[in-house]
Image 1 (cartoon, one colour):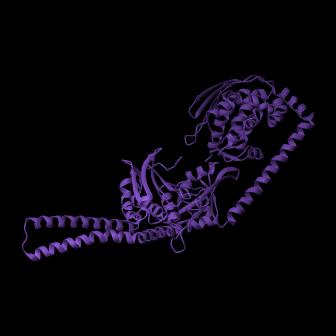
Image 2 (cartoon, rainbow, N blue to C red):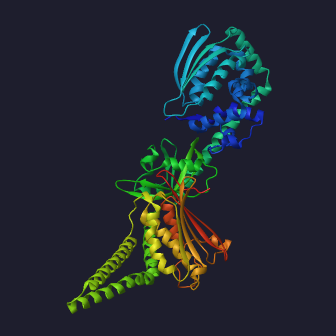
Image 3 (cartoon, rainbow, N blue to C red):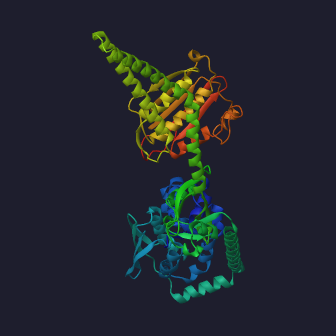
Length: 579
């Protein structure tokens, strides 16, 4: 699929950018090339979409009038100066437009279709150019082409042509009327005379030829080295553009269960990757922090696995492409899942004493009530007052049983491995089990306060959200020494901010230093004495938050307490990003 332009097509734009002193950075930001890279090889393939982006930025910086008069700048380009000095004395305008039809256009702009080329008079043409439907439109291209058609005869030492452009979406219709030219024999004599009398001109031809050869040889050496690098890497690597896979190394083929890497070449990237566009976005984003993207990969047969991917943009085989380094993280994810299950068990162990107390209390008064009823019925005689007392005993026993039933239900819900079930969640309801379980643990340490806004919902998972908040509450409780509950507090708040849902846990505990704050979510890092903490609680909490597309932030100062803020997407397509 010809969805590219040659880097030579940027020549006039680069020349004008230099003439006007335009800054390079805003022109090439997020694109796969720099100005120097374009100049080093005029024959590199640049994606049409990047040419479109560059032209739009160029017009924004240079102004519309520069785009509409681009042909005027031809005289400053060295290759056109040579053309002037020989071809201009030999060629005719008709020859110039035929050359544009058969060479300039197809060579430099293969992405553009020539729909019509019709001679409508002795010195008049009708030309229709069209951008295919699968490519983005580029009005600047049509306008630049119009002025090149207008100024073409000037290259030949004649007056400009008259050009009318009818511009439509994806289409440009040109009506060109060009000036008459001298006969062939006078033109030939002028050209031969100019060539033979100009040593400088011949030197320029020789220099350009040598430069072209050196550029081609350097590109071959670079591409050969790049292939050796890919093939020799133990990392799985894939080279692709938006339309197709261009190359994969053996490690990538092995990962996908494919016998030969070449079997993947030419296939669409989404045949093997669930979201190739996210990889392209990473490569194009100059501010990307290098965090790997997560995608599913599909191999031979039923082979599929979760992958962690980093992608960069490079030039390969003369075109702008993307290179992804892929790591199979299925084993790591399984280990992480088991660690999360272990974390739930550890949390239950920490709460066991408090939970057993919560169960023991209602059991004690249920036992007392049952003993009272047993004795009452043993006596066999009872008055109206005894009946009322019996009714009260039965009522309080039922309440106690309901409390025990609720605790057991909560424990069962927390103990089982939660299935992934993202959906709309009533956040306040989802937090209730964690708030009930933490209360006995906090009783000797602090007062639990809740500030829960009404109708707070999020796109999340109730079980995993409950696990996150319980871990945060346990950390808050353990940051406060027992003995002074009236002097300390742990506050849980829910609210919405900037279109996202926020759950905040604030404590008046010991706090941490800035140095510790930067390591608080690292695996196996703990501030607790040896034997009292695994160092996995907050690490796993952060991992669960990542799975929920949520952000976890921590603010803390020594002796001033800690605030942990969980920012959740409020909708299915929202990703939490706290400003």
